[in-house]
Length: 296
Image 1: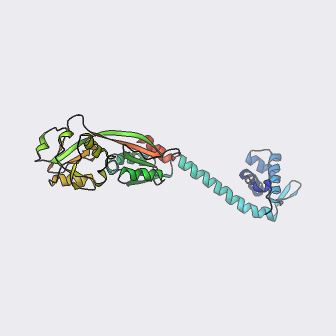
Image 2 (image 1 turned 90 degrees about the vertical axis):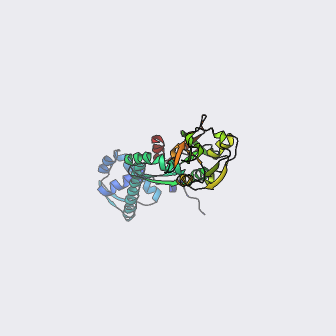
Image 3 (image 1 turned 180 degrees about the horizontal axis):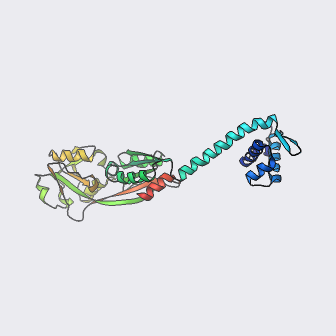
C-alpha cells in the first residue's frame, strides 16, 4: 500500500471555515474580515487546503473569484461539517451548563425511598433538562458492581463497602431501633442489644452476612439472630412484626410502624448504620453527577 503523505492527512476545521466564507462571498477580502484575519493569511490557508486536496477550489482572475467544480463539491460538504461542528459544540455547552445530560443513580431501597426523593426534586427543579434514572437494588454489592461496571454514575450503599475501584463519601450515620408487637414484653423497655439473643427475628434475605450492618451489630452483641421470618422490604418486615411473627431491627429511615407495633429504643451504646455515596475511582464524573453530589 502506498504511504500517505503527511499533508494528505490534514484538513483543518479553520481552513474549511475560511473556504466557506470565501465561497459564500466570492470575495477574499470580505471573507477575511468576517473571519477576523488578514486577507493574505486567508489566501495562504485556502492555498494550503488546495494543495492538500490536490485540486483548485477557485478560479482566480484579478479580484474576481468563482468556484471550480471541485470547490462546489467541497462547499456542500464543508457547510455540513461546520454545521455538525457547531451542533457538537452546542451539545457540549448544554451538558457543561447542565441544560442537558443524564444522571444514573443506584441506591439501597431505604435511602431511595426516604432520603433521596427531596434531594432529587431540588436537583430536578434546578436542572430540568437532566434526565434522571433511579434504580433500587440489594445487596449493596450489586450497587457497587453497577457503579464499577459503568451502569450507574453514583451509588448509595451502607458501609463497609470493600469493592475495589470505588471512591466513597460518607453521607450520614443513623441509629438502629427495634420495632416490636405492641403487646410484646419489650414494648415498654429499653433493652441492650446484647439481651435479645433468644428473640425471634424478622429479617431481610440479603442481610444474613457479616457485611450487612444490622447482622454485624448482632454479631458484635454476641449472638447470631434467630431468624423466624424473612421479607424483601422494610415495609413488609414491619407488617410481619405487626402480625406477631417476631421483632425487627431497622435503621431510622426505614421506620414506619404500622398499627399494632411500637418502636423500642435500645440502650446505649446503640448500633448504627452509615450510608455512603460511591463512584468509580480514577474517572472524571459527568457534570450532572458532580452537581448532584454537591447538592447531596
